[in-house]
Length: 402
View (cartoon, rainbow, N blue to C red):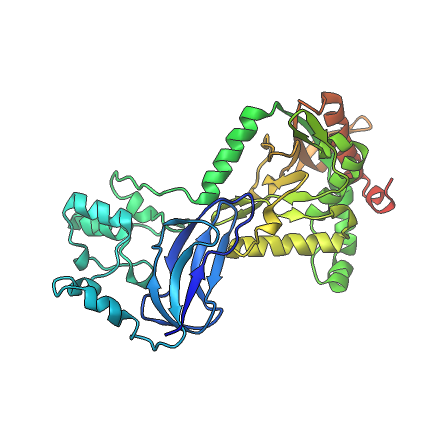
């Protein structure tokens, strides 16, 4: 017998613990080297834990939903065993009365509690979760009287574990624990509101010059670089342009000191099934429009797949949140500490504006800058936003660095 321990990988310094999600393998099953055994959720990302070697998963030492830390041993793999043989040692310890439990479907803790409260035998409930697990929704379905089992119109449902059809049947309630990411986001937002003196200033920008440039060069840009020319690269470039003029907006507070950063690491807020994440464009001032577009596109895709790494989510000197993709007209974004400012971008809409004494229709976008008034004065905040506005209304400045 050659036993290899499966350990939690080294987490970053800012992550003290993580939560195990569902195991993809059961005790006694064979595993292949680099095959994902279990997903580990931190407050920033979900990590895959691959098998360190070929063999059989002989022992699971940490169950799903348990908290773990760096280096914790969560399972053992026997590199010389054959599938099915691993369960034999454990079987010797079982009494004859305990053996039938193996035939029962695995039951999630919340489902077990609800079933006990309502007197439901989970062995008779058909599980819809991974590997046939009985979920809380399955118990709720089993508890419904026949009259309530009539089909309802199909609804577009959010990501599991919420089941809208069950939730809207009658007057039930569904309690779902917050993910570590959601808990961390909540903590940081409260921290930001309670520790910073947050103000928001607004301006409007005529996006017609940017739209005309995109229309003129879109086809050639895509052929040359293999990616579409979007709006976010213009906003990133305009933000860097303004940050160079007003370095305090790119600074942060450390105790009684102001830390001025000589680099521009721009956080881009991205929605994911697990919640909002903010991957970082490192040295954005050195990136081309094409590099920015490609990187943001990759961030969005990997955020949806839960493949962002811890390194990509740590740090940042300034952030941009684009609520316009969801149709937002105006908002007051919250600063992502320890940063001192965040730019909110919104939907571009045709609006009547006055130009040279005439009312004309222009594609307008409202910009919002939330800033920490402890180190950024109103004058600097307003002029910073004006610098972004001027750069977007004359995008040649971004190319010529004027």
